[in-house]
Image 1 (cartoon, protein in one colour):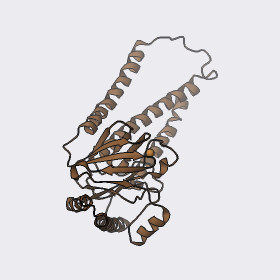
Image 2 (tube, protein in one colour; image 1 turned 90 degrees about the vertical axis):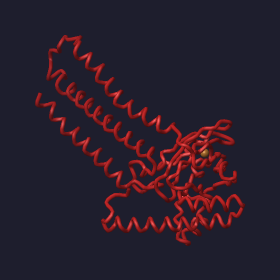
Image 3 (cartoon, helix red, strand yellow; image 1 turned 60 degrees about the vertical axis):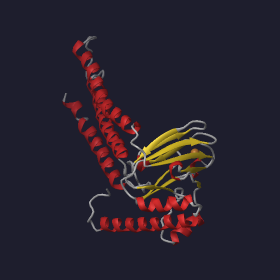
Length: 308
Ligand SMILES: [Cu+2]
């Protein structure tokens, strides 16, 4: 008996390592975009994304516990019941108590997982009344957006190349590689946005990790998602359904701004004043970049404990 428990500290150490990695990943997660050495999810800016991460973390703990348990059982079998340690094996073939236990306990574990899982599903598919409706159409390989309840204007959003990014960066606007686009989606902060998603050619997928939004764009069909961003800034995502040679180069960029800025921008777009609309976005982008730098400086000085 002593022999087999020697393996237990090992599994505890493994569990501790995984927990440490999970904890570290929270600190390393980016907001709206991935960050170097990130392991966990991007920081959530909607209630749904928060619930998704909580659910993921809960299931992860259960998975790790089950894995450690099976690992311990396996070690017991290997060390206690090998031919040398146990030359005359037991003839036991049945144990009613054990059989009831290994049926009931997994059922309980599944119920513990099912309850928050269904809660989350209901939350994702219960659409609060929309303040803004956005139609996103996936194309090979870019996104077209339309604002049907704000005059129906539309535009195409295409990934920036390196020289276009450099031009923005020179102006002080961050433009991450493979994520920055020419025309960002603009939405108001703290308002419900319904996204109607479809595709014109093959299946794409409209995804923004920080919003907890991920929905297939299927030609000839309409799918939908919704989000209510609680924080201003730019939030990136990428097409998440293999759609052809430039699948990796059709990012999604959503700029969350103050409602009055959104009103100005949509007004400019409606009156086809694209130059004015661009100015409004660039001004917001500069503001967001400034705010981000300020937060990072505070974090560096240890004045802001977390990145929430
Ligand atoms: Cu795609």
